[in-house]
Length: 146
Image (cartoon, rainbow, N blue to C red; front, side, top):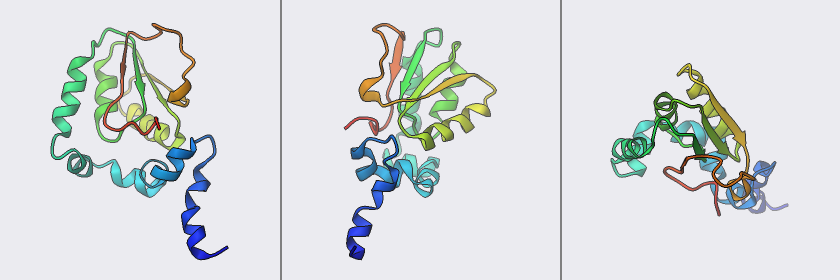
């Protein structure tokens, strides 16, 4: 196999249960450990969001009712998940297709001392009944969806 083909096909190592579009286009940001480490820093997130991370996060937190059941579709980098878990009166249910993203979220949630349910699932087919959650949140990037 030519070297260039090997580089072009690198993303295939991430296909284990990961949708092909996500593995092919975003492996470097959401699936590779160096990318996960790099992007989970406030300075990087704030740069991507042109300095509006805190404002956007606060707007999302303010829009949610802490007493209602909450589904979060797709994990995100930064402080939002631990802040959300601390705000909610019921455990957060977080769905993501990437185990590495769920691992990152689990570490953050563990530091809060609060409970949450982390579910590996593709957001294209959650299999939830209508009305299963009172509110849902998708924040920042839709890496779950093609």
